[in-house]
Length: 564
Image (cartoon, rainbow, N blue to C red; front, side):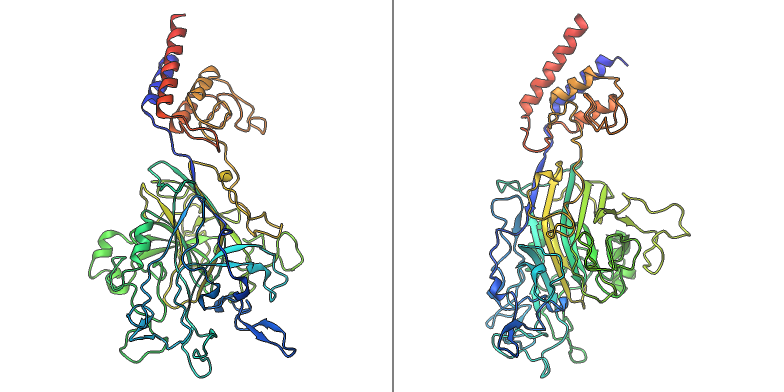
């Protein structure tokens, strides 16, 4: 085929191709939220009449809220704000009720478990300086604010654990800071969503301290938030009513039993919500299925009245992921050490399944929207893979299964073209859940360099996990000006056939090498076309009219060369 013809076709392609969206859609470190630090702990007086944290709320036991006072005094009133940055929080809409109106919490004019200090603010919380708690002086300090969810109900109010003291939150008080939904926007606050073929990248730091914390992508984040306000309806299609009124942990025979509300279904085979594109779970507990995801059961099995979904509730398939343990004894976790004085790798994973989990981790991802699998998924820099077997007692690489689990095999729960937000929550009917998260960066067709967050690098005493994947070379940028324009097509033409050293000297910087493979071929033409209009950071995105002019100019240049 005539090479000039190939370039002519490529230039014509630019005439009809619009610029690809390249934008940061979430940049959140919670530092714009104001937290009343004086109320972070419940205080008592010691033998010297000095104020010290109450042992039930001093951070010793994460299932008790890590010092989270259950009045509204230290709890931001509403969802986090994220003022002036990409990403807009959407408040959950749970109908809590009041003494005058029945809801999930108030029934018959009283709180469901007779607590006189009920936690009626169910919005996600923001807490301060978790790592600076006095009870945990050896922990790596993490200054500043962080998001916090809790859904904990591990007993009823009794004479031994009273909830009837005004102004005092008891151990058995139901502690709630519920699901967090954040919608993609640009820095100006305009709504943004992906389309097929976009590359979604992101990372965030987290502590999955207890229960079944959940993170995921949504195709309609507003709908997910709105549905939290609909009680007595079936949202996930499994035939059971959702968001039912809460009950005590001990109820009489035949009475309704809802001691803990399920926020994001999936755990134990519950059907995942229809707006979920992907959800990743972290099980902190005795079974050590630490990382997992879920896929829906086939539609015919889901709707079969005699099938396992309708009869046994097995409406989703749990996929066992690896790394699958947060124990320091697991050799697959090289970040664990056995001493507390290691400045880079402090031993803040569990040594036994039920120990407190203090260490922050980083989950990072890359996903080409519409595909069935993640392109990249890492936990603290280690590749996450889907195991051959769902049985956590077996090796991830099942000897009876040909091949071996490899990066890029983690399935997307429900692939589709649209992702417009992410969510944080918890799953499970009878688990105490606590979840910390911070330094959230999500981009579309953009590296993570575009985010400016407060978190530090591992070992610096700020963020335990680091900043996500390494920055990637801008694919399509053949002339190294941090944007993909018609000039890159010219660079490919002028250097066509060149081969660069396939070592660090290449590094994706060879003129004309648009796809970073150290040679200039027809693949570079395709890379320019597929990424036209993408920018690395603040470089201007060409308008469609500009793209057309560049394409016409290139056609003219080709024509002049032919006549010459």
